[in-house]
Length: 231
Image (tube, rainbow, N blue to C red; front, side, top):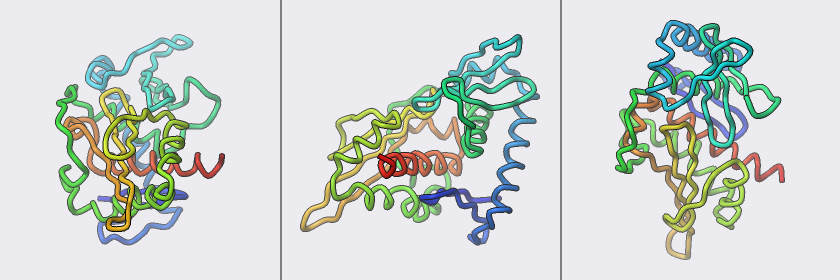
């Protein structure tokens, strides 16, 4: 089993002993994961998949496609011969997002949001993964935006986040139709340093595995920081 986390510049895979894999190993493992997910989707009941995931089925050039919203983008996944592309822009979908979208379709159980908020630690296996999750998602956000949290809001809105009232500064990302991620930062003072967290609806466990939730959270943080640095 592989543990997956994102660094600020790229994504890093770890094996079960916590040893970082090489770029070649990482690419190979991602290609294997993509191939397996593609094969699984090609054999699945597409109507059930669409109903459970809250996505939609459209016809493009005579070929069925699943339309999967991801934040402010739309992903098209052809069926049954799987290929993944954007419907709203001329760019390649990164491999991590292809896998994440396929895993979302395959893992979604049709569970509606419960309104019960949880943190990463409360996910299955989340307590053990949390130090890496904090290091690769929360701390980079604090380091990038802790000095001026208004920049956190600006960067988040640039990639499709919605400002909400929680903590000192918070952004809601509608990652997939049944998945919301709430990024919250608290401003530091003389007594306490800046802090942050990512909050989920408890139903997220019926949409993605803990590893995939980590990747989704990590990469949204990466997108925010990269977008801000490229201003």
